[in-house]
Image 1 (cartoon, rainbow, N blue to C red):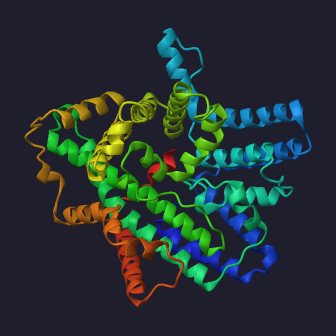
Image 2 (image 1 turned 45 degrees about the horizontal axis):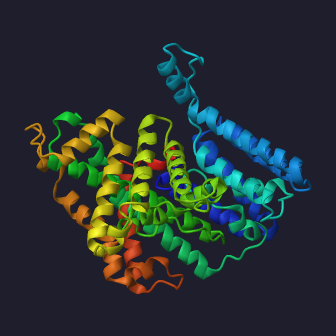
Image 3 (image 1 turned 180 degrees about the vertical axis):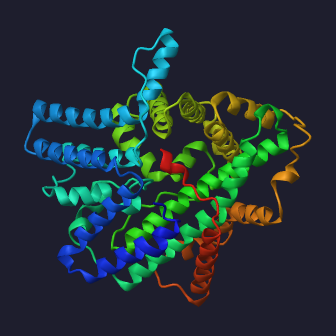
Length: 468
């Protein structure tokens, strides 16, 4: 079920809000857990059993881990972590491993299997692992209620596409929280802004990006190649940041405070800064649970660079089980190595606009690797962007842009950071928890109406991160 679907907006969400409001305090979590399981079962009726198994595995693992010390504690932690990774590995990476081994050995080593990727498994597995790892590190107390741990892992606002919420962020809120009129209004505001990002902007850019990237890469001219990269760069930003805004808004409607996931990443002046601003909860997860355990930056420059490479190769694999995503992770690993070595001083001395242009160029190249219909196609696409080419005469740029798209393109370019940097009050209007004024309320109503009109008309409406 999509947040930007009519079923969710007109039936599911109103029903859950009404039930949540009507039941006494002791039953509110039961309403949220039941709603979350129904939400997941709507799209994945079979794999809800897998999610419940994952919840139970980590619940029992946490109870077993809590009273232990020393070697036994480490062994239980290793067993629970390995079990989580095996579940994720089987459902997400079995086919990739089988194909890779077949290519290396020239014969099939693993039997061929068609395994559907369970919705949101990467997100809820990482959340569950953060719980047991923090418990092992004695940063949190064990959750003795299966019911509350199940709500933490399965809570529908952030279940299938983040933000990745650490247990320590919401442990107290699971037991007790307050839903105030101002908090609810803030949640509605964030949700509507996120919905507008998704339905008005991301969906338009998605349709155009699909048209352009559906063409034969070796016949795409330079101008069209750049336009396709721009469409996709804006699509994925507004799609994913819009989803995160909606998730944060939904959480606020029920009294939860979720961490922010985006901080205008296209304003970054380095690739390192970009990853501190983009999908911040995933970056934090990898930093806390992979980079630091590997040694972080405490063991000299060479080890630091190796650790960075390992983290970004893992980041690439997390996004998808094929060599295309590994190459995308390797692209960022190479850039970060360069920024820690030969580019460090030039970037520090460069004017910020020039550093931002460099970063945006690197990110757009990365999105081409990420989006192209295959690694080889991505390399051909990058060649078209780098070396002037006329392309196929029947595919002029004018064919893939019209008046409406041009207006939305201008709005998308301004609102992904430049406008907020020039007029900080725009940023404040989104994040402030103060009640919206008349002008902002009118804007929100207009945006909501436009979204409904577009959804009723059957607009193109996927979510990119649902497939990760």
